[in-house]
Length: 623
Image 1 (cartoon, rainbow, N blue to C red):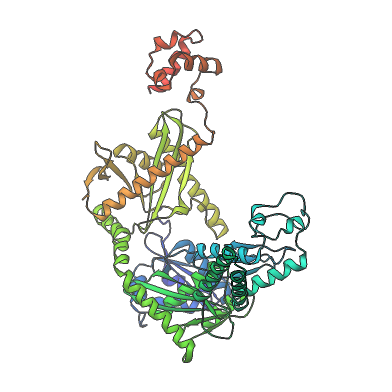
Image 2: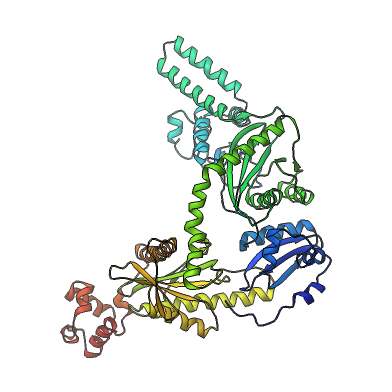
């Protein structure tokens, strides 16, 4: 990384801390952000880390040994500090913060009651549009099945027509003809009658299944008495479908409240939080989440971190959270959740009765998940962070949190593109992938193309750093620099990267992935020597995955450009070759390979070619 241009005196900086709420950010010797925290008083909180007399716990003691500097952002309230803390943790993934490993989003069922003729849709976000939302559901397929069932039961429209404005403008869709829509687009049902069906849908989604079950049973029996057996079978299938939905949503209490039940289990650096989703007094789903924890963290600290990260990203917050652990910052959490919800949110730790049993059930589920997945988590750890540790030992580099790999793809120099893939903690970070269309290089020149890609990447990064530093906040697409650059090749590619870094005054390790005669990775080129690597090791497998991913991403972009018709003939890139000569060349030689292999004399045989044009074509393919 870039070398610090100043000496940070921790003792002196501690004296300057304000006694105001805010967020503090700890940096290590490589200037990585290793911890983000919030405080009511920055002065008191940050000083505590450096007081030798305090019993700090394993995590804090370990972290303090790596702190080389800190910075802080003052806020107007502790609530603002909590919001900022959540955003910074999500952006930087600090080593000593508990991190939510899953990034799940859940579907909702949306009834567009803001429309005159409402629809029932699957939604991923909750908008302030006066529609009604139900969920979250843990299975998108279950949501689609429920919506299909609602169409069969209540004949609600699924089209995007603007009703009543578009009534009668187009023909009715298939759903009308198969009796899954009452045809409001044709004026076949009044707004009042349609509204009654929508009211039944809302009852159904609120868990009131008794009316529809009785109605379907009566219709099934009536059809059977009338010897309409096909219709009776249809009603029986609908009846069974509704019963399945009702069985999945176990009644947990009669209050009809919305609440989430959270409990956790931990072992070593692994933790699992189990969440039960209760809506209208019914459990509509459950899910579990994995977290990476820091040494010595308490269950309360882990659960606190989970709540901040999970509810920062979920579109729906219930009126109550029931927890397995008492939290330290419960009041500010309640304020934050209430502000996000737009209504009061309570946080409770039940001590008796059915609510306590429900929390215990969630805790039992968390323990079972952790026990069952323990070996899978161990395998995942070996192939990711374990593999990174192997590479650190092999190369003699510590702190390889972020690695970037680059590759070039083209067809005979035609439409050259570059790829940048990013791995953090041994896992792909696809949001940080970048692709480059080569602009300044003509023909097949991988070294020149790579130099352009790296120059553009790090020049942009430096510019963004300067801009955001001036603004004292934010980050851009290229701001974060890697701890290691991986080149798809040996000495030549490594030297290209080192040349670019030297010109930009950057100090980042560069490693080449050397291939054998069969185009398989055989070793690493680092600091002017080839280092053999055990093909059976996790480190080797990680390098191979990164190399394959960079190659795949580059080829995918190259094909995308060609497939979209955004490419032009490679002959257009050759000086002295205009439309007439290009047409003559293709007519005479039939293929690009024949042109590439032609001598200057053969090229000059064409009536439209002179010596200068022939030499230009030959030189283009033989540089």
